[in-house]
Image 1: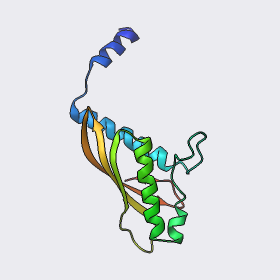
Image 2: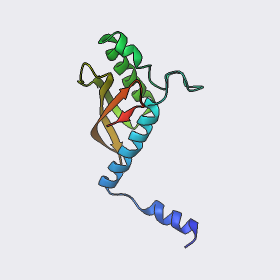
Image 3: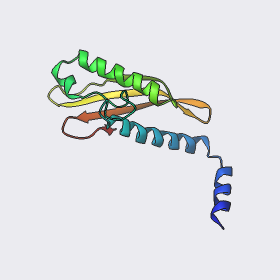
Image 4: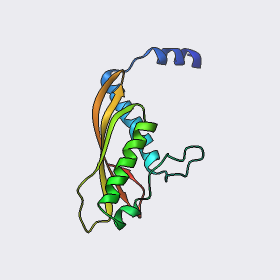
Length: 132
């Protein structure tokens, strides 16, 4: 089978809702990981893309944590149109642990339907972001 026939056959296949949801979640997690790994202001042409430095959270908690969550929430609204009504808040963690935990919740659009999804994230100033 030539590549054009394969492409035509693949575009005719419509994934089931379950498969579409899995693919949408994987895409969002990948995009979210890239976003969380991008320092705010480091992307040419998009100074609002990325996240603020997390070390500020450790210096002036809890207000800095609330501000960080609000900024990420606003960025998700702007840069992730397929993730509607995002809400971001700090999750509980061990006081002695320097890892910042947050939960991201929103409506992931899948095949013209929306599915409420939750993602837990963690950042340690010494390691990259992780979507748990």
